[in-house]
Amino acid sequence: MSSRTIVAVEIGSSKIKAAVGEVADNGTLTVCHIEEERQSPNFVRYGMVQNIKEVSNSLNRIIFKLTNRISPARISAVYAGVGGRSMMALKHHVSATQPDDTEITSEIIGEILGRAENIIDPERKVVEVLPGEFMVDNMKVADPVGTIGNSISTEAMVVSCRQQMLRNLQLAVNDKLNIKIHNFVVRHTAIAGMVLTDDERQLGVMLVDFGAETTAVSIYKDGFLKLFVTIPLGSRHITRDIMSRGYSEERADEIKRTVGNAMPEPAESNRLRHEGLIDDSEINNLVAARAGEIVINILERVKDAGLRSAEELLRGIVVTGLGANLNGFTTLLENQSGVTVRRAAMPATVRRGNSRIRLSSDDIDVVALLHHLASQPTRECVVVPPPVVEEPEVHDTAANGNDSDNFDDDDVEAVGGKRRRFFSGWKEKIRNIIDPQDIDTSDESFDD
Image (cartoon, rainbow, N blue to C red; front, side, top):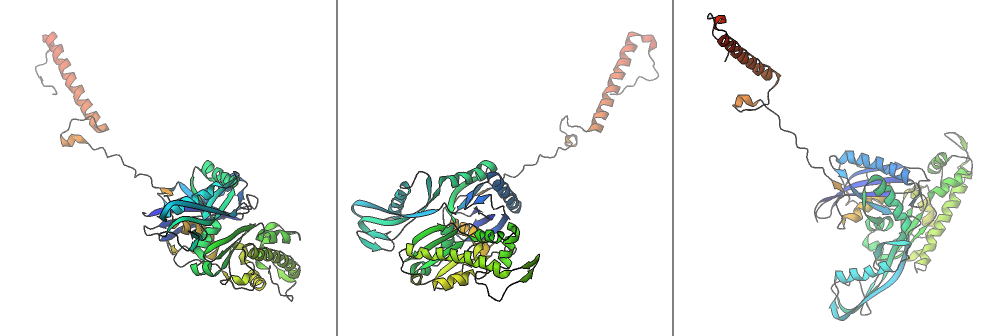
């Protein structure tokens, strides 16, 4: 691997982000630039691009800003994150049998996992295949590479999405902006790869990505992904509940962020807020009710993963996403689950390109895409135009004794004057020869 520049794009329901990263030859990631732009809630719905024109316009402005930062390089390709209600993960048993006892190689593993891509609905597209626990000759092995056996199998987790989601992304990025999408990356599993530790996956942990219109939930146990599901509920549903009290969406979102509390204090009510008297108790009854519904749906996934209760998640729950910023949400989730809840944090191993880069938990989504790509054999995303070759300066070559027609105006005038005087002298001599009586002997000179 050689040093390369990669660009990741995250097109969400509330905002669009793009980030440029430099990957060193040893795989170290340096985040160089991040740009984002908020967008109308109707441009992207539940993770799928709806208004291709507006999304491409927003992304074009972001790409323009990033291009100015990396000039003279130009962004020619990106990797796009995918997520939302369309995402689905299903387990599928895949296996292979060797004619004799054979050493299991990474190529054999890749071939087995590749078979899982052929069992999906034609309306859906496989974007990632994650291995489960492997069995070699009916014995469980943590890492099958290097083992000897005749048969090998695994319960692979096949992650897919609707074909239409990918087609709309292609239309917004490739067709409208003439920027190639090298590949698609599942946002949620990329986040898990960056913020969860190996110990957490082994002992049991739930990752919750609380977004604008959806909440993605995954559960890891014994080192493997046991469940990945997307709940069609997000923080924008809380905003719309507040809008039912006669507020605009922008104002309702502000109230949610400043006044809203998933676990309100009963004594806090009727505070003066910006535009007049807001009944905090009424607002927070709405907030608490919707937040409680979301938490119930999250915790129901524990049983779907085959666990008896959340207490089997010995490393608790990790939350991320802008929705997790709601006051009291993590406390409510912790109280209802009975396990510890922590906010996902940016790993210290992610480097910043300069002191102006401020990496926060709100950037985890797009940085996680770069982090995932840094460990893959990804392709270059920028091109550098060849240097402009300047035309050599033209000099007066008469001083160098060279015959040339490259004269300036003064040179042309001087040569022209000399020629006129030369031919004038010869004309006079010819006239005198023809008529000798008119020869003036007082001056026979002429210009040569």
